[in-house]
Image (tube, rainbow, N blue to C red; front, side):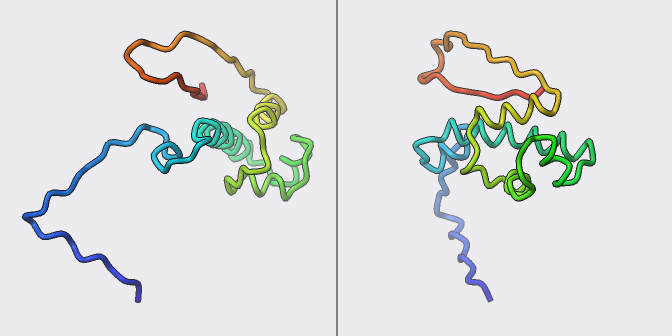
Length: 118
């Protein structure tokens, strides 16, 4: 049986910390922006593969990789994929990619990278 934490007594305050919107940054990863970008690209690729009802073998042929690479992608094991390679997969799946560079707003301390699937 798994150990369970005992709930805090009612008189103790529990601090609630709002996340940044990037779980990797919240966990302290130095490459949080890259990880988040790769995750969003992979999510979009996996969604397209699912909607098209492609098998991993047929998706692999379309993307120019072997089936184990598609399996890794499907399971979000993204260590072996660069952002550029994931974008190449999207173009192979008939998706245009648009990169827009703009000055960050003064209200935000740091610049960021975001991926928005249309």
